[in-house]
Image (cartoon, rainbow, N blue to C red; front, side, top):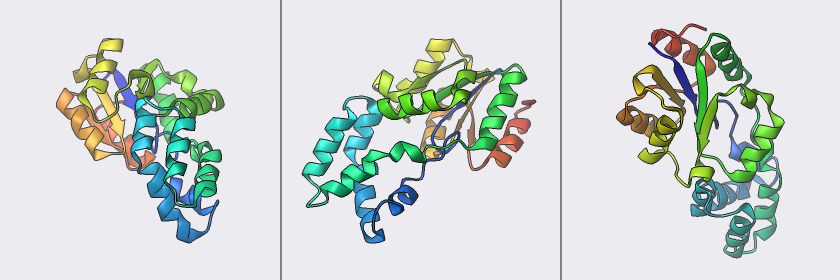
Length: 200
C-alpha cells in the first residue's frame, strides 16, 4: 500500500529549460558557451549544495569568461523566470493530496531560486514537507539526501513512491528502497501511479 508520494521539482513540477531561456537573451552562437559556463559548471553544483552564494558564483564564473562577463550577468539576471509550473503535474499533486496521500518534495535547488518559487507559487503550500539540497548541504543522487527525508518524516520506504526526471536519481532512490517513477510527462505519470495502485 502506498501512503507517501515524493516529487522532484525541476522538470517534474516546474519547467527548467535554460537553453531556451538563453536563446531569448543572446545570440545563438553564444548559447552553448554560456550554458556550459553556468549550468554545467562546478559552481552550479555548489549552489545546489548550498556551499556558495549566487553572488559568489557570478564573480567566479565572470572571472574566467574571456570577455563574456556581460553575457554571464545577463544570463543570471532573470533565470528564475524559466521555472514555470507544469500545470498537469501540479493538478496531479493536488489530486493526490485531496485523496489523502502525504506529498513531499526532494529536490536539488539553490537558495535564491527556491525562495523565489516558493513565494511565487501557491502549490508549495500543499506539501506535507520536503528536503531541499541547499539546506542540507547534500545533493541527489547522494544516498544521504534520501535517508534525510526518510528520517525527517519517518517514512516507510515500502509505502513511498519517488518521482524524478533523472535516471541516476531514480536508481539511487530504488537502492534505498523507494518505489520509483521516472518522469517523462504528466500523462505517463498518471499511468505509473495507477500501476502502483494509487487512486487520485
